[in-house]
Image 1 (cartoon, rainbow, N blue to C red):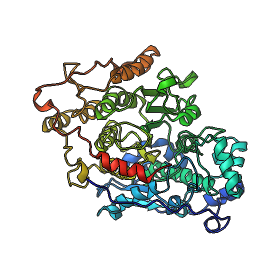
Image 2: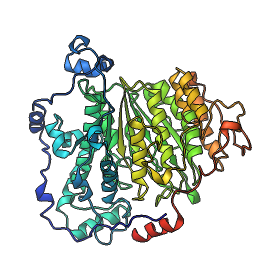
Image 3: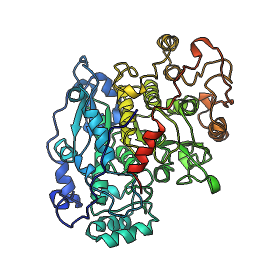
Image 4: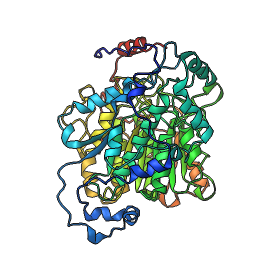
Length: 538
């Protein structure tokens, strides 16, 4: 299989006018922020009685159940979608920048893949930066950003717009080429963060008709710290969205799931002592000769004080982790933790650099894995009272990331895996076995139903504990067990019966559980990846 050719954007030196002059900076004055909030609210579709469960949102609006009409039939799933084409033009690497993996084309290729769907117009309620204001929201002010960042740091980032190329290059060296800078960097970061916060507002709004939102925006944010940019990240988008959702009474308990291959050190640091935010990350981790960026996120880091037990790290100490390893961790740890925490807002830090073919991650996830993780997550929560927001983080292979995002969207829309052949490169990866579907239909327990969704790769209920999945990568079971031991030692999630995982052996003949031929085959060929690497030389 060969890829369609793509062309990197022109890296012409910037000027101090032009693109910047065509975009208005959001006001940083509290008085203007209040004026923005005073604009008339949009007319949303009346909510059903199921939405009444979001008590915090109702209380904020001084509404009661009597204000809602009887439930109406819902015709298809609707999804809020934040995308602004300026983010495919802003914050671009200057000539000679050493760090060029986080490229503006990332959001464009994902958006174009979604836009090509025949059901796009009926499914997605799209809005951009201007749409945030017209939809009743507001761009984030400096005061908003100070919820997670220091004034000094924000002031320095804002001043980047006035620097010349050579000054920007000097600052990049200061950051050890961990980020690249452009006069539009802070503006792009601010638009991205504002879009994710608005996704949270719209999906939790008691009078809205959808509790699902997707943000296709950049630059990413889970590495950004209170006083430092790092790892392509400048503003802590998801941590900020979680904290503002709590302070503005959009939610009472927020779950952040981070499946980017890198640990979200910034998100963890900023939420570590908040008992109402549970941060859960699956990532590679290593030190010394086994170092993997950023080297943080140990299983023993489980939160502190009143927030003890609200930080969960599942750490892979080796590369080449694939669907079986991830879905083992998902079934054994992630699903029971989510079931116990019972969030009313879930924000997914959705990085695709654990996917096979990524330029950095060195792992083997297929888009089907992202589909199954999303689908099982939706099964374990009450979708009438729980909002979910999927926000893009990393992922650097421009051919892989649209397929991974499309797989997530299929799960959000309740579609069967590859039923319509829309993901042709993955057509060899079939849906769960009929036996699994029958078992799902017989269960009313959400945790059981969610786990059974994964049984093509990890059968939680298989009596032979060494044959619950395909043979896993070396050390993968120990990685999962380290997290389970840390949670058990802390006395967290005791009612969920977290158990140790055994190393798996090859299964020869297990009827419907027999591994399907071709399911583990590469869906990208080596010559295709060589072609990609050649075009993204840095």
